Length: 246
Image (cartoon, one colour):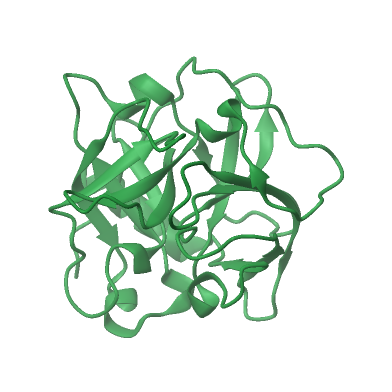
């Protein structure tokens, strides 16, 4: 079994994005500065280009990023994280809040053993940087389990080669196999791990993360329809493992 790695970020006073409009449009557009702050992109140290997306989520004293499991391991064996880095709010081809190194990764062994699409979720624990935690710098979103799996959802992720993130509002539905689905135009390779956000809280200025692009077809085989594993009991258990490891 893989050792658990969770990147948990506590809520901070970071500027909050506006809540989504009530009318989803399904068209991906370049995200505003505020919309982009909660999300970020993954790199391999020394390789230059980013390759997946993720977001910081709250979790006690742990600094965690949630992303897709296929972003950190593609098959049997431990998830590779020695050279894994995360850049929150990456924009204009730069990392305004720095680049943070992974300290540990938690994935479910059923993903590494059999690529179970229902468990295409990973938690990355980030190491402190210059004496600070990533949550001290950019804050964190809430993570929710057992949500209905329907309604308006907001996605912000990074297509390969893009200097800026793409945001879309869409209508989330739950498939017969339990996977989540949303139609959002322009979510090309690189957007795997993109957070699915809902239930904006105006008091805490946070969103609830209810999914990530991944799961069925590793998130979808077209750029216009995306999928996510449902965040139920198994993903909640994985999150708890990551917290305990941290």
